[in-house]
Amino acid sequence: MVGEPVRQFQPSNRYRDLAIGTDRRTFYVITDPSGITSGPTDLGTTVLDNPGAILEFKYTGSH
Picture (spheres, rainbow, N blue to C red):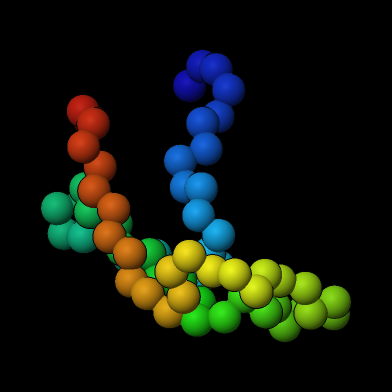
């Protein structure tokens, strides 16, 4: 790959898991229901775009 990376996902979410569809072009992303982390600082966000959701993304480009 050549060039700088391009940021594809802009929303404010905490992503928990990812599943790939059988067509290998559909991606399902599970988001956390809250923005609080369990780390030593308890930092996070109080605003989430899609709390507790399953988001579907489809790859529409060429192979």
